[in-house]
Structures are given as structure tokens and as C-alpha cells.
Length: 381
Image (cartoon, rainbow, N blue to C red; front, side, top):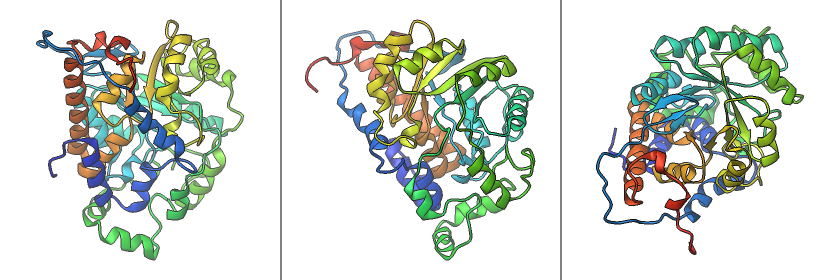
């Protein structure tokens, strides 16, 4: 693959290599996409304090997230249909994360199954759970994650109903893609992607087909997923999920201090300040603007993680300076995956690490544990 200097380079490469419907799926937000844009744009308003004549030797980005050692405080976020950005995408991304020393989180709505990812990794990965109406299926998912020795369960709280993403509707998103004239024409210009997809048997939702009642083919799967997200999900559900799981639990989708306080009372190990990448409530604030008040509200009671809008190592550092103990990248690793498979994911992580390391040093610190609000400029931006 061609040399890429930043995540934007990988994004443009992925745009050329991945069929439109799947690139747009990864790269879109709900409705007007105002929150999706704000997630990125609000990072640019935060400025660093440059410091000089300080010792920059022996730097380290090593940290921990929920007690697990990480080479830098960055994890791969759970993303649906990852295996449609590149054949066997979840398996490749999990291997890249393992080699790099950062956590990988598998989505319920993945193309490769829990068992697929477990078969190609040596270290435990994390599993993200959506709560469906079919509780037997949910219990089965939890038990499968335990059997695969996943070391954390991530419960997503902000997808009781699905936010509308116009691009997905216009593109007729499906997995595998419907063979319409428009899709065939678009895929014809992306032959490497097509050839890779022909070589794999994994082209649908691996965690669902053959596991959920009455779901054995693609037509029934489509209707099932549209009907199954549970709008009745409540804080009481966290209790039985936590009991069934019995391990480390992360709650994803917190955007309000009051919800953060309720989350802290559940006994979960961490929360993720997240607005689902701007894919749910359009018009909600960016995650970076609400992070400080959530840290103030519960940072002494529960580990606070962050996602939404990270496109560089500098963005990672800004979130850490504002109180996050760990961060997640979704679109950046998807761009890398679409651009170059496993090597592309590694490159995305390398880019993030280098930017994080250099910025930390130029702010006068050697250890990522020393990142704090004192690294941020307080004057007019």
C-alpha cells in the first residue's frame, strides 16, 4: 500500500478501495450529521501549551485500561460490518491490535463471529453487547463471549432505537450487498475488494446467523435485526447482564453527568463518554465538550473512557488531558482496514502512536501518565 502520513490519507485510500455503501456506512452520521462533524471540529478548538528545554528521553506511552496493560491508552472500538470494509476484517483488526498491544472490541453486529476472532488471536479481546428482545439470544451471546475468554464485556446503552443515516438508506445497505445495477457498477471499480470477498465465506452477521431463533438466511436476518433492538432497555437490565457476565463490564454511550452518576452506581468497571460517533442523536453535543463535566461528576468513582471524533494522536492526548483514562478509535482503524487490510490497521495505530508521542514530548512530558489539564493552553484559541 502507498505511504500514508496521517489518518486522512488512509481515509482517501479506503474511499477508493471500498464499495460506496460500506465506506459510507463507516463514514456517516445521523440526519444532518451535525454531531458527527462537531465531534471532529471541537477537538481543533483545544490548544496545547508548548514547553521547551525539558528532558525528552526515555518516553513511554504505556498505560492501563480497566486494569489491563496497554502499549498506549487507545483501543479499537466496536464497529458493525467491519468485515465488509475488507474480507475477514474483524479477524485482521484483532490480530493487528494484539500485535500492537492494544485492546480490540468485537461488535455484536460483526461479520466475523466471536469464535472466528478467537481462532486467530492468542490474547483475550473485548466483546460489545447489544440487548435484543430475544433474551435467550442475549444470554447465549454472553456465554459465547465467556467461552471465548473475552476479558471485558462492553454494553452499549444508546441504541435502543436506530438513528436514521440517510446514506445507508440511499445506498440500500445490506450484507452482503444486493446485486443491483448501481452496486455492481460501483464494485466493478473495486476488483481487489471483490476478489478478497470471494475468497472468504464470511459475508453476513456471524454472531447472529445460525445462533438466533428463526434466523438461517439473509432475508430473515434483515427483518430480525430491524425488529430486535430492545426499546425497553433500562438500568435494571445492567444488573442481570453484570451478574450473568461475572467479569469486567464497560458501559458505552454516556453523554450526560446524571447518566454517568447512575452508571457509577451499577458497579461497572468503566464508562465510555460516547454519542455513537454522531450516528444516533443528531444535535447532541460533541463528546469532547462534555468529557470534563462527566469526569468531574464521577471520575473519582469509576474509570472514564472516551470515544468520538479522534482522528489523530493529538486528539487522543487532548482527551487524556481532560480526564479520560482510555480512548477508542473506530473510523481511523476502519480507514486503515479498507486501505490495506491488517497492514492498514497497523499503520493507523502507528500514526496515532507517533503523533501522541511527539506531541506529549513537545508539551514537556515523557510519560503518558503525566498528561493532564496543565498541558492545555488556557488563553484564547
